[in-house]
Length: 366
Image (cartoon, rainbow, N blue to C red; front, side):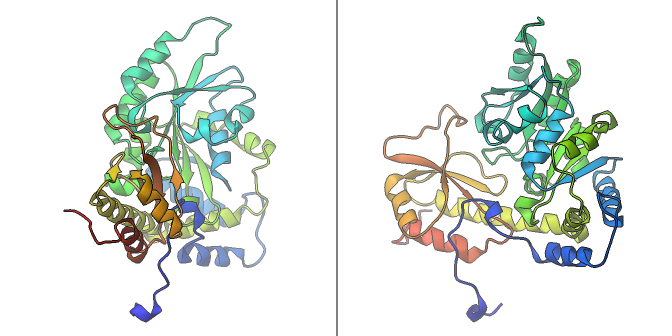
């Protein structure tokens, strides 16, 4: 568009959920809002959504739309957990760190066990050793499900072969494998594989499919590839207060989101802006990347002087934990680890404005 029509550069890199919905999603929502339709998921839009997800994943699926990622994760885990069961995940996974105990609550008292791992990834060997080392006694909680995040809380992605290796550990021990796909689209764009190759073909049994961070208003879904896991989810969703009477309004968002691969276009934009940001920050003297930028999150170790300069200029971003750093990467005195997130609405001008503040003299190295 002409330069005079451009919006001012924005410095909000707090998260991808600070933005509203994209235009195709809004148009689909307005269209789906018109006229009376059956409630509680008996509408034609919700039926179309089930077909759309089956086509996307090249697999028959049971789909349970909900409005929040917390509901999707908690319901998905509860489908495989007994009240005395154990879910194993990374120690900084969203399901254990950021759900206010919702998975345990929805599963009636189950617990989550967090394991360490560089980049917030689970390692198959460590996972196997942990599972095999759990006590086999009625006084102890048996492991029943493993949960991974795609992309992880460190912004890196699991390759299909890595997922398959974790799945093999689960299969050998009779465990279910869950994927928290809050940023599934961003990971898929990075990997360049199909949705099927990254999920059920690699061994995922149940998926939390996210849309809210990538252009939807409020649209998430539990997707079951194993029909046994779907048997109680309808009742669990209703009992948990997450069965919407106007279910078509979530379905409409997803239909607009998936149509013409709009969801992937949104993720490409977010990932491209993250790549631009990471490359620029990497060349600012004193700044180091904490992990590779593989989705739409950039994690950097900032000198305190640059951190202050960015914040004083109005930049918004979050400090972050360094527990999942590689052993050779440390945060030293006078430094901090920060997360900056781009979205489908982030523009090059936003990124470049932040880079100019980070290196005000233009002293970006080569």
